[in-house]
Image (cartoon, rainbow, N blue to C red; front, side, top):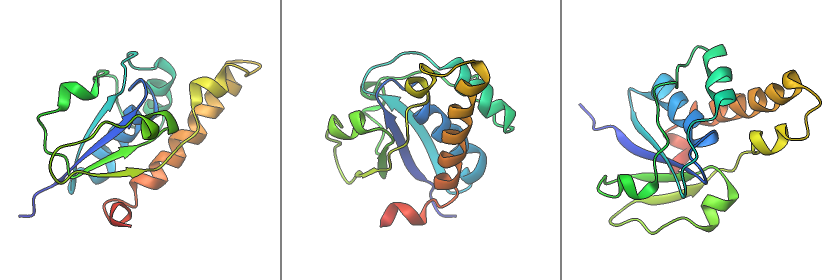
Length: 144
């Protein structure tokens, strides 16, 4: 049996995008990927992210917000930065970890200017679906 790739999804606060990526990876590619998520800082899971993932049939309500230092002893194959800030401030990883940047828009930032809750959720749903499309390409897209 092949060993699963250990993949860390890294964002600023480990509240939204990295949490969704971890959830999608576990749901869609759990046979080949052992997913983790963390942040440069921690903010706690975003309630809207939990909600839109549940709408898509993926429960991330049990995931917790983690600081990247909490996972420093895990030998990751890949660290995927999902926001520009995490990409610019990505810590160095020991060993063979390859860092890949795949940026996604910031739903909480976009939601701040939404006229109502439904428009705010629309931003979350769009990014959720974009993250899903990326996760569906794993692990092949990581080696490019």
